[in-house]
Image 1 (cartoon, rainbow, N blue to C red):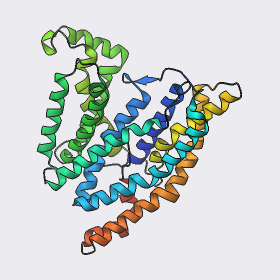
Image 2: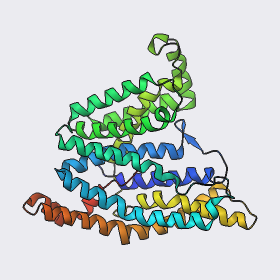
Image 3: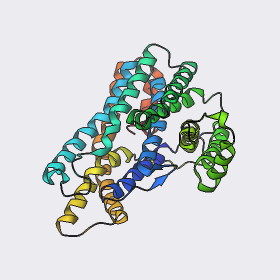
Image 4: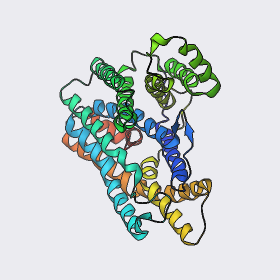
Length: 348
């Protein structure tokens, strides 16, 4: 099946969606929604799907835990260190953003990184145990779905926030391991139809009317929001991989700013709000979005050219030295560094 490579551009769009969504939150407005979720939450979901796919691919390419861990470390940590100090400096300078509508949070988006790190670790463990296999991952996905189903009526963060991230990552991994057995372009198109039926106002209303006549399909305590959780996980995952890998055309870019946008965006937005408020003015969310996108993109570009890309290349050189006898790895590093870098997935 013909493949495309839209991973980099899609990750950048997702990072911009986080900035857009937070432009409303940090100015005290409700965040805009899509598919029943805020733009920021939906973007994080997209990151976890792509990460599940790409991190699984990364381990399969690496072939061993040491190489996998080196590449993960040099992709994540080098840019995260300056981002931490940058956010801490601004947070302290503006007194914890105490006068902002959303005070007291140093760098909001970073809460997702430990959870993604946990999933990276799981992929490494599965690889070492030689169970990074389509059937095993399918079983894990089914078990995860079953465990969530037993708690689906429970309103808590574990069910509503963390469980979807885990399931989306595992689904992305499942798709990567199953891509030789599935027509992912057809699945992607079908998933778009499913998402429309589940979430588009007019279509979802009709779907609900039909499903509501089948009480045996969910039982007396499962409403439509809860029912569509499971098809959403699968349909959204297949749709994201369809856009990234099996869409009808590719938009390839060599500069990956998405990680920088994600980890630097929040302190820039909060600082902009603090500065404007100190002069007695307020920012419209769209104006803040425009300002923060410009400033964040500049800083993200500096992060990419001076920190991220050199560190990624250093990581691959270290891997090459540890596998100096493996001609295939040496060839891939020397001949196609851009292709390797374009497949690195640093975040959610």
